[in-house]
Every structure is written in structure tokens, then in C-alpha cells.
Length: 142
Image (tube, rainbow, N blue to C red; front, side):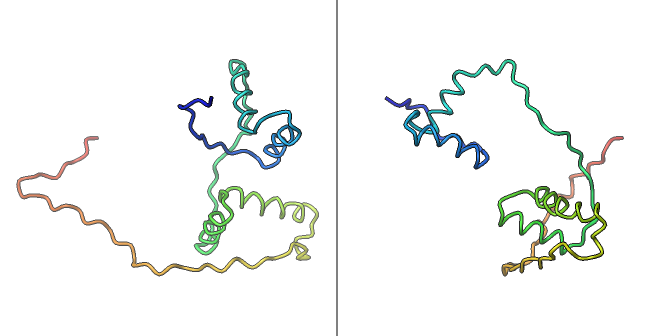
């Protein structure tokens, strides 16, 4: 009988890994992908787990408003981060830069997607509540 307290728990995984988990299910060696994950979690000793994450640095890049807007729109439509899009573009460009082929325009230039702006009223600043005459303005202590 299934556990009544068990609820869905969303987990992000690579498609290739999920495909790998689906093979034992198709071959009849496991009931479901969820069953494989539950069993693995019950048996795994997390005491000695080491998570390898590449070191990352945050950088600032001057980008035009149009490029920033396009990156945000594309990241939403592709369901990915702006960083992933920047990384993909730079990884496609670096071999051309390293080979000296930059001036030969071998890299296919794709036009940016058309941005369809929704019709909305302009954002308004929230009005601050008016101070009463007897209230003093608070000053920050240094």
C-alpha cells in the first residue's frame, strides 16, 4: 500500500539521465523511475558525499538595452538562464577567435527574435503614505 504522506517532489535532471533511468523500467527490472529513485535514496550513505561544482565568478559586461532585452526574452522562451545563453554564444565564438577566422564571418549570424511587447500601462511608482505632521523623519545613525 502506498505511503499516504508521500507527495510529489520536483527534481531537475538531465534528459539523458532520465532516459538511463527509464531503461530498467522498460526491461521490467524496476516498477518505475520513481521507485528507482526512492530505493536509491533509501540505500545511499550521504555521509561521504562530495559534490563537485566548478568554481564560478560573477562578472559584469556592458550590454545594450536591446541585447539585454533579447537575452531575457530568449531565456524565458527556452526555459534556461541568461548565463547559459551567454555561455552557448561565447563557446560558439571562441573557436573562431582562436583560429583567426573572426574577420571571415564564418560564424552564422542569426537575427535576434522579434520581441512582441504586450500592451500594458506604464509602471507607476507606489505612492508613499503621507506623514502626519507630528511624525518626524527618521535619520540613519552612522
